[in-house]
Image (cartoon, rainbow, N blue to C red; front, side):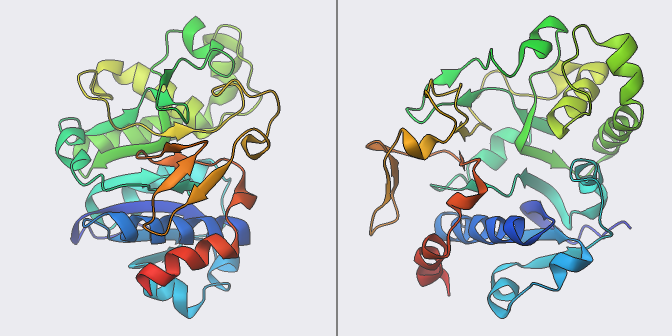
Length: 275
């Protein structure tokens, strides 16, 4: 399936299963709360499509249905499935916390532009030595697909085709190409990083800009003593929709990571602004 690119710009996410649909809905609500460029597309499988409500259909500008796929492999179809000429592809368990419309102007200097530096909740750039040792040992492009940009062009098509080839042949990479590979199966960051490295890492990020980026709430990035950041931090959403963690106002996309953070109570707070 290839979707006609009949819209200029917008956000794309994937949701397979009820929990991911809730997250995608909260993400869409947050995009529309803060951003003026806010067209939003969700890709779902048939069983998830059956869960769509009237409110979902009001908030999602585009709903695209595909067959159920491996939860990582489906993202290799983003170039085919997006209805946009320019796309911010965002993982569903994210919140947009401020207006990031200006990011379009910088990200489009590359055909595909990844986040390569993530932040802790204090806004500090963090080198993820715990999760990304294999990247350093293999000199891989430090690509995070959690928030990425791509435009509709031949070069982007080549990137996604290369990413699919890496996914299909990951056993070869694992056994013969990568040094000290710690992954039995490849997640999206792994095979997209390999694809970007093969095609030339310098073409896939903007070293002169501090975006795209996001706040990553994994334990080791924030030096937490336990896995769930909510056990280490307080958080609040103020009446004027400022999202704070331990007193730090969050202005970047916020990767909350633990899907059960997306509660109906939080969704309702954003619905009151949008619906």
